[in-house]
Length: 259
Image (cartoon, rainbow, N blue to C red):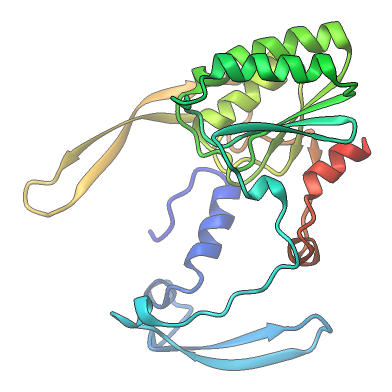
């Protein structure tokens, strides 16, 4: 009744997002009083610490000063400068794809030619398409690149990878499946936030007596016929620790480079 999800990955991310919602915690019986919570933490040395935390209400949520864990570095993949981009990482060509959309100032047709030229000019043994931070859009936008990479992989013999994770949704999941089935890509990372086969094509209507909008799906997309319900699973699963996060280690790219 509190969290909407259609796979285990989405449940875990939604739990993380709602774990600090005092009203939700009281509703499900974890808290007796929504005004405060007694929380026990375990530090890096394994010692436990308990603190009572007061809930924020009303305007406090917008004016409170929050402390954030400071990172030593942030991976380049988490700092996009465009909808799609590419860069060399040793013997690997990395292709970042952050939204399933056409950049009006940088058409996909031009980008495909740039990638083809980079592969022709370089001595890459690996090509990696990064879909980890792509929430979806129009799956057709990437198809020219998928077809090009499929042909070039046959011609050049490089290994093709697609990076996926809990922030990969909708058409980006479809593109990951297409890279795997049509271009022979190896999926690396963690299970996708969106399901491999899922409902979509949203429509909506307004409730007559309440100021609410109801959204509903009108189409079922079966991208991988016969694939089990739930996330698209990686062929190579890569876990990330808190230490990796703080250090700014790109664990998925490290896994690809180490293959």
